[in-house]
Image (tube, rainbow, N blue to C red):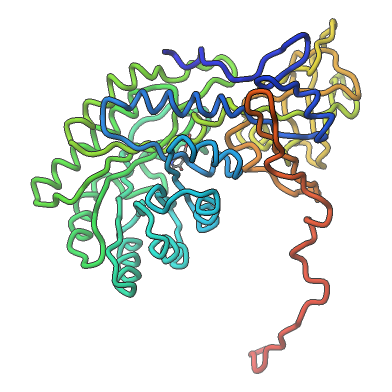
Length: 432
Ligand SMILES: Cc1ncc(COP(=O)(O)O)c(C=O)c1O
């Protein structure tokens, strides 16, 4: 199925926007705005669709936490049997708190600290995706101190051409900071295989995000498979996993996301040939279409020939439009007969604070609510306190019921870590 046709769990029912069986108007009334609203059914649908797509080969789906770290969302995925992929000690902590077993966790990232690596080893996770020889040497030393063997997968930069919509989300091209350069992998793998406290269990790649073409996956997977065969010929036969990362695109506007049947046809044969267990690390694909941000219109303005809708959410709640130039559909909670072309902007003191530019929209008025669509991935997770704004609440809908899964931040939370009476340390003997 072309996944552009998938349903999102959000629809207009009797004139008002709903998430599954719950009206977003009611949630806005009960919980206030801005508020992120998630559809549990959509998360389940996407996870199960990917799981079925990969079914022809032994596989594991490790949801990438960074797309959305909310415990309520993680629990939906944990209950489906998903694993997770984390990129920091903080995400490891969150995954364990959400109830994921250590053997369902893999840990990636280009700059893991010694503390983070030690925490991963102490937790006993499934795999550490290492990105350089120096990192593996450190893992070996830490594992030696603990008397354990570290399960390591080597992240390869397969150096494939990509079609992502923004430079910042390309990660598998020549010269990117991620992974071991393709032509060095066999050499690095041989050195790793000689270490006493590390077991090389996998090869890994993550080539980019919001990918719409399947060819880069096919090429990258074939490149990993060829490294696997080369290592086998050199007697390195410890590998169990082939991790081809995340990156599957979703529909925000008119994009044509990858066709999963074709994905299975083109990518899985190379995996099957290796006999390894496939791992995928999807983030956006699982949660991207599963949420909406409900925001209230505060003001309408006209300035310099432009019409503005000033909303109570902006770049602090949803950074993607200003950071990546990302497009999100914006719908009125209730339709109005007239239309206008507007910039939808937030309250932050930055000219770059917007949700949409030059957008044809219903002629909404102060007090109306807007529904910003497809914000489940890299939405709340990238929200900030800039301008001392409190981060919004998060609500999970499941059928005809809803629950607040993250409380709205309060002013007190903003100053919680500040030290009212700092203790000064006087440093003696410094050259002046
Ligand atoms: C290593 C790794 N795996 C998986 C992902 C998930 O990507 P996506 O949300 O596009 O599926 C990312 C995202 O940046 C990543 O860096």
